[in-house]
Each structure stands twice: as C-alpha cells, then as structure tokens.
Image (cartoon, rainbow, N blue to C red):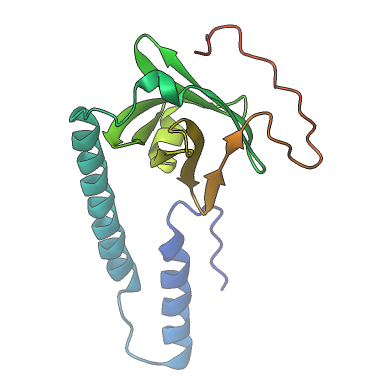
Length: 178
C-alpha cells in the first residue's frame, strides 16, 4: 500500500500517514498522528492570526516619522530585486518593488515604515517593514527591508553597480516621483 497525496496544503499529513504505516508494519501501538498534526496546525493558525491582529493594530496606530515623508522618496537599487521606487501618493508613501508589486508605507517608528502590499497574496505572505538609513548629511541614503529570507539593502539609483550600468529604469506612467 502506498498513500499518494498531490497537495502540500497539509504538509504534516504526509508525515502522519507515513508514521501510521510504519507503526502498523512494525507492530507497535498505533498513535493518532493525524490528530496530533491537526492540533499543531490549529495552534499555528492561531499564532498567525494573533500576529495579523497585532500588525493591523500597529498599522492603525499611525506614528509620526522622524523625517518628512518626501525625504524618503526616490529610486533605489538592490542587487537582487533591481530598482525600488518610493513616491508620495495622495499624501502617503508608496513603494514599487522591481517594476512589480506596489505597497503602501505606514510610519511605524522613526524612519521605519510598515510595508502593506496591495496584492493580498503578498500582504499575507510577505508582511515586513522598511527602515530608511540616512547618510551623514541626513538625507535618506538607502532602505533596508527583510523579505522572506533575504534582506534588501539598497543604494541610491545612480551609484555604480557592476554589470548594471547607470541608466535609470523607465518610470511608471501612473505615479509621480517626488
């Protein structure tokens, strides 16, 4: 007998089924691995929901940024993700990651801002924040942002990056950079 599952939607179920098969083959007292896995999944979902609620509360509690919002606007470049644009849109900051996904930025603490992806899948999977690091003169020199297991470490666009040249990426037609 070989149990086959074509979904990873319940990743612990594979191990539960395999463990039950081994218990049966080895003649040991069977355990309800499926129930144990289900309890773990429910606990994980509860922790995730608590995290989402905390994040929503933090976003709703708007804080004043350390610098004017316009100071964060610009085009930055990351060696992995490419150009990252930050602009003012209706009095709030927005960010576009590598000519793709767009997020609204909400001030959190000093020059750190919550990243609220407009795409619900990105919002669910990649909750993060961005911290802008000023240079010696106080200008926003680069954003730092953890995304999954990567850390986006940008530099202002125009700083030489080997193999990239110094041409600015084409601007989107529906936003205005400040």
